[in-house]
Image (cartoon, rainbow, N blue to C red; front, side, top):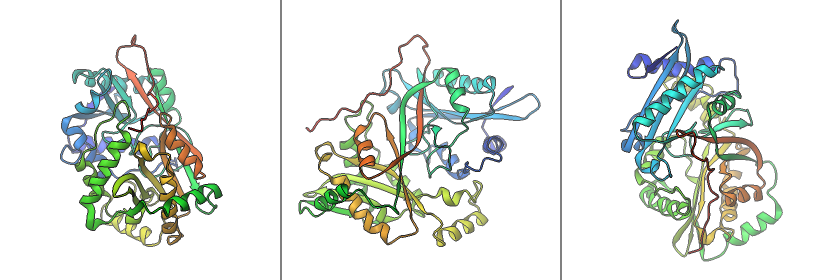
Length: 390
């Protein structure tokens, strides 16, 4: 076997070819857009790697047949929030062969060591964790946009190498054809009509104001997490700009208490329901296909990317009030029949309780795995988020 670093157009082509070989005949797999994948490796488009590094490889046998691929990356600010500096590995695809998989993992580990890392998480992406994060272990079905899919045998490959579960991720599905729980709806309407609360959906005309509110809410809501890192406004701006063609203003909500931003809710149409027809290409033909399916309302599912509430208001029912306002929006768009609420980490019981309260059904589980380079070091799972009202 031989490892080849991806450095030019020819090797990039091989990198994108690997998953087509691995998932040939698998109707559950939806090919991501190659342009989006390439953007992750571009420091000019991905702020995560500007304060760190990223590289990738493909693996071939001696006859030149592709066996797999992997990427390794790190961000200094994030890496150093852990007891041991931690990087990541992702974009892993491999045949069902431990020798091949271990060669890829070894390469990622060794490169990260040269960058000062002492552990690696995987499979993750070089960016925020609401996109392409975790190993699918339950719920092998076509995934929603930004949710990773993989072969079932990958868990054995990771586990045999020595990765352990750092935290579990749960995805819940909400059938919009069913009524919300009556008790939830009663509380939702009551809170939504309280005069001290105000609810607004995103408006492109006031983008900067909403980005400021987004960052303020996010930082307040997640600051008690052990490895919290303040949000970069540019990352949000880049996300909004990149997702502009598919974002629906009425699916992004903010809650305010006496003018103070206290909660955010970001939901997007499930673009994967269209991308499955494009085979990773958004050329002229792909663009025409995309517009055709979008015009015909062929996206019937949405995905909740982020839901955050500042600690002081996490027991106020404000999340139910957001759903109360959102329900009016969805009734005007009857082609949407399902909401995927993904994902909730096992370290965040608060958001899990919200998803259950609204009637969500647990449909999928992903794992975020961690590998410690020092094999004698005690392994610890991600701690439960401890919040304070102050």
